[in-house]
Length: 121
Image 1 (cartoon, one colour):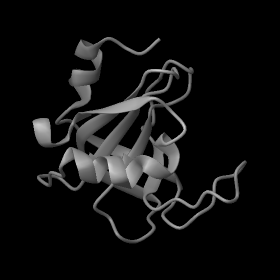
Image 2 (image 1 turned 60 degrees about the horizontal axis):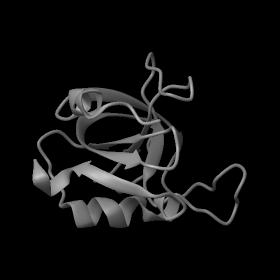
Image 3 (image 1 turned 120 degrees about the vertical axis):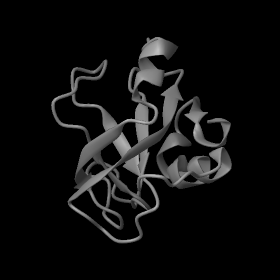
């Protein structure tokens, strides 16, 4: 079950610190054929439905990083999974939904998901 839309909208526009545990160019730990085209990590001191910290895709950063502070510009809502994902970008930068979908497709192709935010902000 996904968090209610009001909870999701809580995150939109917020500045967050992301710890990157799968930097751009790294391979998925259980699926080595999957290479991360974006930095991917989590928001410390949060808890998602899976009892783990909220996960986040970082877009708009073209080199591997170990941490990042940015703004939540969208949320990937998974209809068939309990984990939704935040999409974080450099403060003040916006991306159309189609670009967010393209950046996250490497992983989201396996889920029934939609983007909340992006060009509809």
